[in-house]
Length: 123
Image (cartoon, rainbow, N blue to C red; front, side, top):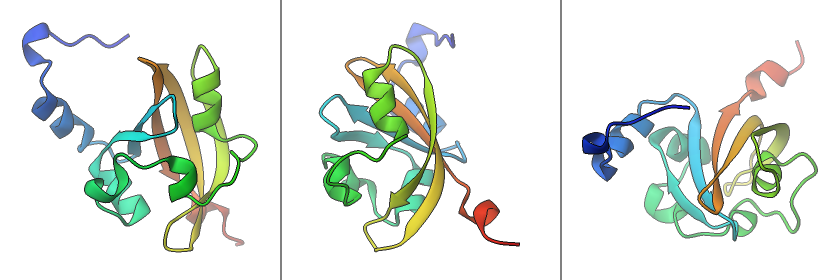
């Protein structure tokens, strides 16, 4: 498990670290509400942090129910990490094939999302 020195546990510092990740990072509450995102998530979703944080992912991604294999839902239900490949329905109407890795944290989940749509296109 990663360890951070107590004097480095700062919101601004953690935000700067999160924004260095190439994968999209989303923090969810157990109620499916987005609690935080990084810069890569803004790019993937085509929306700003202000538009995403505080919204229910099912409303945002136009899911009436969680898709089978949804890594976020699996992560909330599990005691450990889970992986899944799903079609992500973006607010702009596009669909992306993504690999989702989820780990439960503090009554919610931390999710990394990697867009693999280009790899899935027919050769």
